[in-house]
Image (cartoon, rainbow, N blue to C red; front, side, top):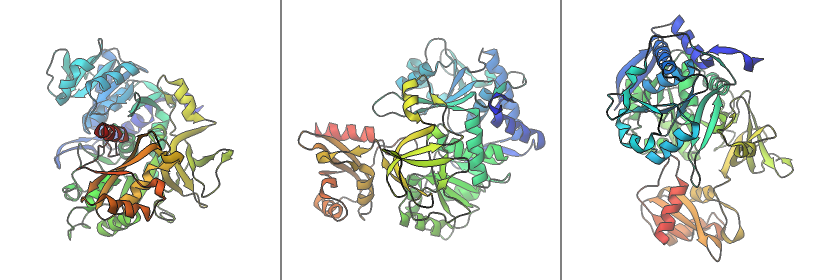
Length: 512
């Protein structure tokens, strides 16, 4: 019954429209550039702009189910474009802004997009990226043949198209290392329900100000910050880059109450000189993804004076899954990623069903934010969605109280001498050495031992035999890297994860 109910523009747009009707002057979005607020839009202005853009999309022939690719920085243009797509009944496809021309063209062609909205500084990649028949609009002064200004897309506002909760809302392309990216299709119901659970879990209020510095073309910022803020009638401050040295000053200057970062960003924040003003801010919590060590969490909480709340989710679950609870023991032991959110179930797979408490296996998720499918990939969809569960590809365990602990990426396993070894286990041990800031561990082909373990290390250069002895104190001999390579920095994805595909290619090229 619920899936057949029509919402004007979908449940998230309807929520924005309701806030606009009740409190049209309430601040909705703030664009922040280099730490300075350069533009602010109220809920009334955002709703009106989205309806104008929806009317322009309809004029261009974009309607129910059509795809619109968004290649935009964190800005009000991004949010208005996404809401405008939904009000027109279309599907928004945010793409990674670091995509090269070939990657952008693949996303456009794969989803069969009718239209592209992009930042004007990205014109350099448009020539080879834009397939015939796709119309491009620039969020800024248009330059180049066939490119029109985004302002031209707006038309006299019309009523939003009725959208079902089960209709497609977003397609996120997950970055691939050895194959083409997969388009993760999320419905309007998945977007709204999972984001509402987050809004309730973080107890968002209308006077909250959420600082969005992680990219909106990934699920973390979208479903942990932006959409929850829109549903709660709060303010989202949108910045296109994170600066560790300026972050706390910006938090103070903009009255930020909610923050969300990656583990790497928090480490860089802790590396800044301590100040007597570190606790002088309005933050009431800091959420993060990717594991931090126990001492790092303790240092951050003591220095900033706010709780750090870890989260676990996937693009395929609209970032839904587990969260550090506010109403229970926050961790039940360090490195816990919390308990299943309301409406969600978490299980650990075993060969004969489900694993017992404490046993390591693949993490399974079931809940309202699970993807509908991979875009035009039925076999991959069937592999990921089995027996009513989303198979994460991550390994973990549950304790007796239902707290989830991350173990490793199932596909980030090494096999030296026929033994299964988690790269993350070696990385964690290496990062406990005082000279090591960060480590990435990969395996390269070895004709005698299947794989040779190579550790790529950032930090204060020290002798390889010192790191070897350090590892031998914590790990079985077959887990100790055969080689240590020191570098200035590790290759990262756009959300701060180590790009293992790129790292492995660099190690193999070095060996060759």
